[in-house]
Length: 389
View 1 (cartoon, helix red, strand yellow):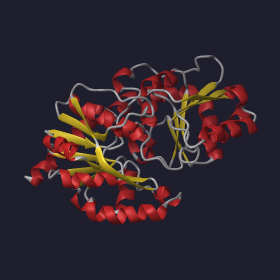
View 2 (cartoon, helix red, strand yellow):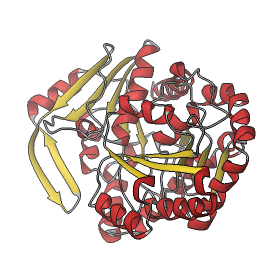
View 3 (cartoon, one colour):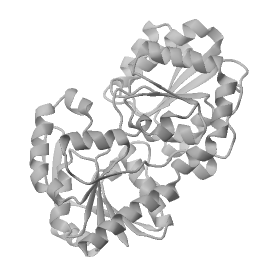
View 4 (tube, helix red, strand yellow):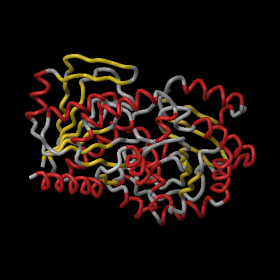
């Protein structure tokens, strides 16, 4: 079987690119012929360059023209690029991310079955927070030019499956998670500590772009401040790892200063994906308070690493009962007081919670096993191919 992953912005980097890399590499490890199609891009990508797997073909294509309307950009492949893409002869094309007009070209380039992963694009908050008219217009066009040709929608979580069905009812949808990126399951064999390594307070970690609103970083900083005021030395530091996003770093620095947190909050900046594991090793608790987030890979990395984790209920990962029921995962509303209370709870029960994390490690590793996940996708691809044949 030949599977082509279509993500035009792959070389820009970011969370979706990391997910595509992980999935493509896992499928190549299973013996599948895998390619990734993306527009050639020379600028430095977010989170560093993607790892290159010997079994994955990178099909960089060039546009003959481009047209932008606000954040929406459409680029038509040159005739040479179109021929190169067709000549790869995929059995299935798996399209990643939406509100991307470039995705329309797959219906003109390929006759094989199409799978589409939205990666959170249809979350209600995406429409509430801005550019709603433009997004609704895109959906009207995409219903006619793209979605009618898609054979299977992929949701990263049960919550996303419901969001997709609310906007595009009646389409076949499969729910499959994505595995770890920064902390491969095969390298996560160390047992979680039962005491903070410094003998002092617990260290809290967040990994991702410094998108203050979407990622709820204003809530996280305020919740940490509230918990630290109550716990004193029970909490040591909050470390935020990730690149700046639309001046989010400056806004966070102002909030940290206003709350008098000083050296208690560390903004580590952006690091390559390969460097995230060091921060996970040095932390005691992972927190993600996003106002909306389909399936953040940093949460997967933290869970695979065995970290007690506080997650907003707006994060799609929590809609899996396999995750929300874990004793070391605390699901809260994206709320300052709830976040502070969860941190205080973990301080009080740290030995108990890390023991529970250790006992659940095998279950977590199996759930996020790339081999299992790759197999689920391949089975879905093969079913589509048989139906078309």
